Length: 316
Ligand SMILES: [Zn+2]
Image 1 (cartoon, rainbow, N blue to C red):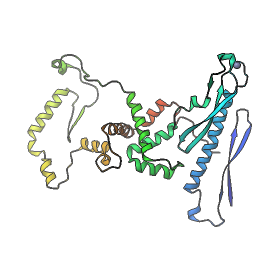
Image 2 (image 1 turned 45 degrees about the vertical axis):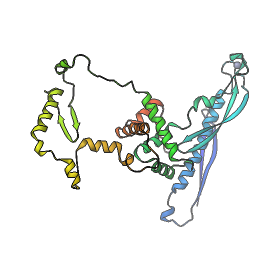
Image 3 (image 1 turned 90 degrees about the horizontal axis):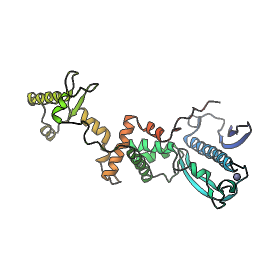
Image 4 (image 1 turned 180 degrees about the vertical axis):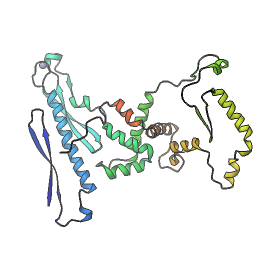
């Protein structure tokens, strides 16, 4: 049995073009291991589909710019260059024409422009950048490389250093959006702070495993004072972690450290092939916290408004 996969482009005016995407063959005996598509076949099909879809989109963009917007005269081509674009379904080389501006608008024949370069301003699509950043925030760069190249039709060129650079770019961009660090959040004389109104919502302070939960009727300083009293009174019950640790006991100091562990993970402690710089570690923690908080997708949507916003593909 043979399967032929085709892609049909339907233009605004209803005209259609058929592209051949892939062919599959199966012998007549059904086997468990050849039921459905294999991962390799799926990757090959997706890669080819991506190439054809992008080719069509790119062509449509160039056609739109082929004629002068004012006098409708065709614009001549000055030359071509290649645009490299990394997508989730493979790396593409796009032939991008440079067009001469129309003398009617510019009055200068030497001026030219590249319609595709004006749109494809980055080397990776947001989706590719997102998926790399997402996994590289949670796993090692090496494991991310392995995972992505196992599942997606990415080139062999995909390496840990590239992924790290992409993650750092995302983190730098996100940091650049932050306002300058605020030194003090409360104005006025510290002596008057106790008289300030109580903020809304419960107040939880984590201090090495102990925590004080603010009662609605208490202020911040009363809560800290109460915590201090609590420690004084319960001194006998607070374990000596140093002593226990030397005894080979397991140490649990509650939610503060579990959060710290979750964010920082063993990644920073174990021997790593890639050396950490304080700046690199700081940036990785920025994206990791974003991922754990579920904020990364929204960040990308803010940068690229149409990111993951297209309607779901309808089943034929
Ligand atoms: Zn013109």
